[in-house]
Amino acid sequence: MGLGSEQTERGLAAVVGRMADGVSRLVSQHLALARMELEEDARVMGGNVARIAAFVPFVLVGYFFLCAALALFLARWLDFAGAFALVGGVNLVGGGAGIALAASRLKSLRPMDETKEELNRSVAVLSSAQLQARQAQSVTVTREASHGR
Image 1: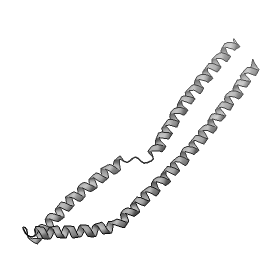
Image 2 (image 1 turned 120 degrees about the horizontal axis):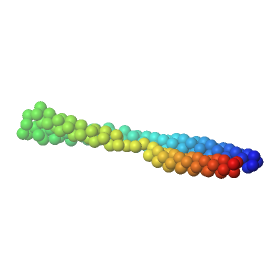
Image 3 (image 1 turned 180 degrees about the vertical axis):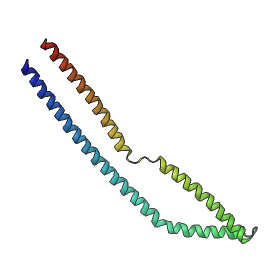
């Protein structure tokens, strides 16, 4: 009888050791995945920011000329100050609305979604495995107690 419990302890220790190795490997893989995902996101975002920065001067110059032309056109019915104030006010309201929309979209952005999902799946699997291991240990201890009587 003593031999059986010794084998069970070695078997249980081996299972716990393998589980610890698996958890360690899983955590290191999650960290590697997170690092790769961050690098990819940063690379894509950097490229997009560079493209935007390259075209901003053209947009600003064109926009300035269009606003000046609109103000000169409106000066036929309003004085120059009123025409420029109207064009400036419309730009101010439009720009504020655009910034508010961009800010709300930025708040809804969830970086590293894939990593979070994968981590949640791993936690669920580990939780169920831990529960199964506890149940198996409980059954083993119960059997050993009943055989010892």
